Amino acid sequence: MKPAPFEYLRAASVDEAVAALASCGADGREAKILAGGQSLVPLLALRMARPDLLVDINRVADLTEVSLVDGVLHVGALTRHSALAGQTDHPLLAEAARWIGHPAIRSRGTAAGSLAHADPSAELPVVAVACAATVSVVGPDGVRTVPAADLFAGPLMSTLADDELITSVSFPVPSRWGFAEFARRHGDFALVTAVVADGVIALGGVSAVPVRSLAGEDVLAGGGSVEDVAAAVCAGLEPTGDLHASAGYRRALAAELVGRALRQAGVS
Amino acid sequence: MKVELTVNGERVRLDVEPRRTLADALREDCGLTGTHLGCEHGVCGACTVLVDDEPARACLMFAVQADGASVTTVEGLESPDGQLHPLQEAFVAHHGLQCGFCTPGMLISALHLLRTHPSPSRETIRAEMSGNICRCTGYLGIVDAIQAAAARPCSRESGLSAH
Image 1 (tube, rainbow over the protein chains, first blue to last red):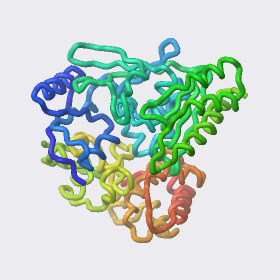
Image 2: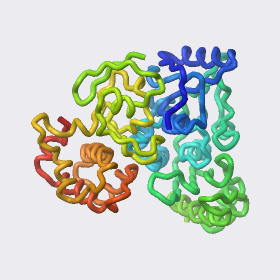
Image 3: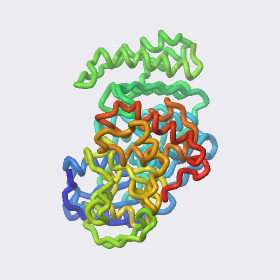
Image 4: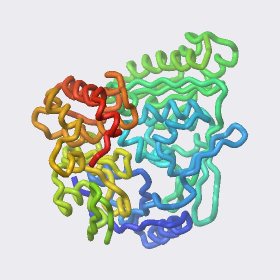
């Protein structure tokens, strides 16, 4: 349970980090960004990941800023889950962050790290999709902005290039929202997560990536009841069963959790 | 790599491989074997320490990342004259440990809990301590101990400082 040897660079700036990623890739070697490390370091310990270089961005200035501008919360890449849980400008984000892991994980894990890791059961990717968040990404060719829904390619797979780095995530603040998840143990990844943000319904744990339910959103927009919306959401889901929960159980959970999230958002 | 950190108030200079976890550096290089390693991949909580007063799993941080940081381990709890910390006394009094393997992580997590929630409910204690796994006690004694430590007037006055 010890990581394989790697080189370590403590980047002082975003430019230095991107340059290191690019030059490592050009040499045919693998580099990884080290932010909070709460997902990456277990993978290193289990030797499921064996990068040649770790680029530590924890000392990069300007990546921890959180600011509310015109109804959008801009979250610096290094913002810890504990800081997200403690802020009051984006109550949905605060509620979601409180469900992540345990105190010792929330104090280290970062917002951008959670998105880049792209775990379909994690809280923040679902919230990002529900809020139509945008992700600022820096690479050798400059800055680009990616809609959250386009960031996730599959389980633990993002559309980020090897030489790219998330610098911030912008979460529009919904006026009505609901958040519900179910896990067998406190702090575990959820079996299913349901998030309602204004007219958007997004789910985690029912697909390879966080998904929106356009069918459910249509019924919601048409003034449907909680039960009708939940039924429409579930009709469109095709979750896969695994050792944690069968497909049928995940679908039943999704119906219940969508209902809870809708009621929390004020839908009756 | 050369790193310099403060461990329980003492300056420590180390020369470590980048892959050296903070937990291994504390145990092997500093000789502070109170920080226990259970799972070594961030599940069990036994290696929890405070890094700049925030709880962290020492198996999920590399020692090089702690350069310049202040680390508190279970050895930092008792006073220089050997007097146990109020939390340690409460764990003894309320059967908060059996084999003791998880106890260092429990104590550090509990220390942070009482600093951030001075009068926690049992429900809050269970939620906040959920990242620490114990295979012996069934947790009731641990919850009792933390509640008892929170109720002690001296705990409140001292702000539950580590020595």
